Length: 452
Image (tube, rainbow, N blue to C red; front, side, top):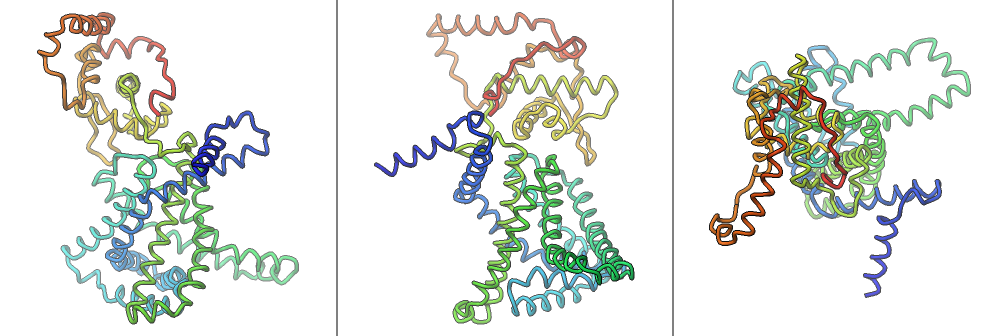
């Protein structure tokens, strides 16, 4: 009983304290405590660990095809030999076993002759890699409360562009950096103190900076929503430092132990590799959660905040979305996509996606066939009457309705419901969606509680 009282008091201090009433120096501390609380809650719920485990097995199936494609691209530019140090650096926490495993993986990659695979073999190779990236996107979309994944066309164009251009840009940047460092002017500066000491200290930070940059770019690109750079950098910074530190601890505590070799014998290297993959994916997903809560601090709550929409909120969001889409169409501007709408309207992405599903299902909106999936009016706005529109939104998605005889047996209740419907429909009678767009839109009062 005393433990329950203590837990209740702690929850009150964390979540019911008004931040604006605290001194300035206490506010960041409370914000940090809330951050740690929600991150711990997300881990204990098991969704992040479950998705990290799923990505481990997908990685095992896709690692060789992924490296084979990257190897082929880099080979075309003559820098394929630089891929091995990166692989060995990733496997460094495994110690000597990492070097052995790295050589085996490189051997598999070199045995994959992309030129002799044929169209079917090459297609399966590309499909395997795209499946891995798609599963990564789904995990990130779950964290970012995004219900709509990229279309098939977007997956091929965006994923393949990253696979082809990404390795080339990375190794080109590294090559330019190495050339600059080997320049005689830079070498002469390094020979002068304190520049030499500063250069040595900076070289220790380079691995951290590379990992933080890679994680930040991943958080910007992978979720099917717009991620602000500041939020992605926050997640990348924490996850990058955590990943580098975890690699050191993993190599010290786990790989240094002889128990795994004694128990698993020759399978020890595979078990350790899977453990390291799981820890790496978990850290990557945890960093994505940090980026999400940084961008949307309103989701820092005691329970996982899944946006709940009342009927009123659905109607308001639907009218705002239709107004924006139809108005752009009248001006001849390109239609928005779901991410544009979430940013323009300042509404959570999952709330916009759910309302869009209703509007698309009723044919009020359609999407273009291109990779951008722009939204356009599905019907002539002059033929969409607001009364029918609102009635359709109210009944959208319902799977049950009370039988008519229940209302007929209760005349007073039936009359009340009929008068309520009339009170809603009379102001809308004869008005169309075109009227709503051409006239100044009425002020729509909404509070955050309607859709949070």
